Image (spheres, rainbow, N blue to C red):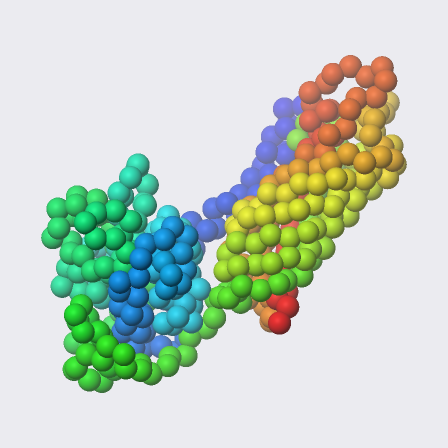
Length: 374
């Protein structure tokens, strides 16, 4: 029993582990190498700062992503999207994990600043514009909304945590990337500010497809793993698939899903119909599920029977996924999923945690593709 348990722990770590740790590994890779293609550092940084400065005076609004209101990470997100046509993580914490770490002495205009203003985790983010100044959307204090502040101010000096780099930095950028807090940002190749002037376009890749909201359809297929405990002798428990349709914002989405599942351990076919909601990296789902067949676990010398076959029950669960990668007109990602489908013990069966746990919990890993409808 101990050897069997160890085997499943190892298999679970081998297949599920990458889904939870790859994000942190990728955070150590220079971000700009993955997102920019043939873009000179001065132009990209000027465009970012110019876009952020164009929002000066916009009021603070939690969750805001337009000129009616912006929160701190919303300002950074919209500045990258509108200035560089790049979609980046949406929250302060995810931006902190995403950006490449740099020392404060290496900080340059266009880098990101992170602050701990409440609790013990990153809760505020800003764009550095040079000279100890940064642009951000403040929620509290004598001035709120999108403003310019300085690292010499006592509050920001006390709450400052670290700096991060999301755009390349070249030596010549030190001579050309500057910010004029009262009059805009210099044009490329010039020395005078241009508050409303145009800035040349740069060739950057769109990451991901959903820079703007839209409807989608999707498909997913996953390998379902055998029971952690007794009752499923093989690592292969079955197959889980998903056909979905819904609406997706930049990172949040909601949809309706049809989830055909073959459960080889119980010898049944399930057809859940669920509603799902969440982000690109985490989803919850739930809904009614019909079971075709009579569920039973083969224990070698006998079968352990469960009730609930050939009837409607329900299924609830959650999934975690790697950040999606663009493929064609959609995005593909790897995901892991845990789902609960409640089967009751059959007549004459006493409670047995190991077998009942195996019968009622499904663990799957697979691949998912969402296709954007134009």
